[in-house]
Length: 96
Image 1 (cartoon, rainbow, N blue to C red):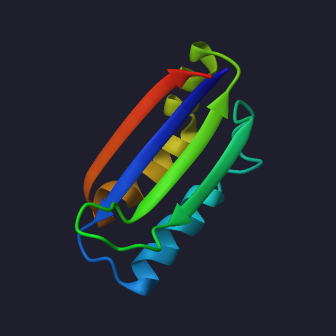
Image 2: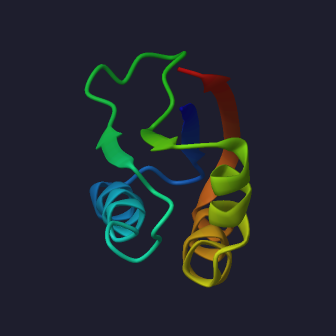
């Protein structure tokens, strides 16, 4: 199994923008067949080193992760929104 974790730092982390990002990430459920696990949450600590939103996804294989990356809903709907609202996006992918 492959775990894919992404951290998002928003340019303007208003309550509406945070909810919009979280909701868009969660909207992938049921739309991308390769997703085996999906969770997204808004940071509650809000420290100087915190990111604003986290995404945790799991896939059966690296091939499934690659298919997710280019899936029309992810690439055409989710990624453009994240690019428009985020100042920084970092990811880690590992075998789990």
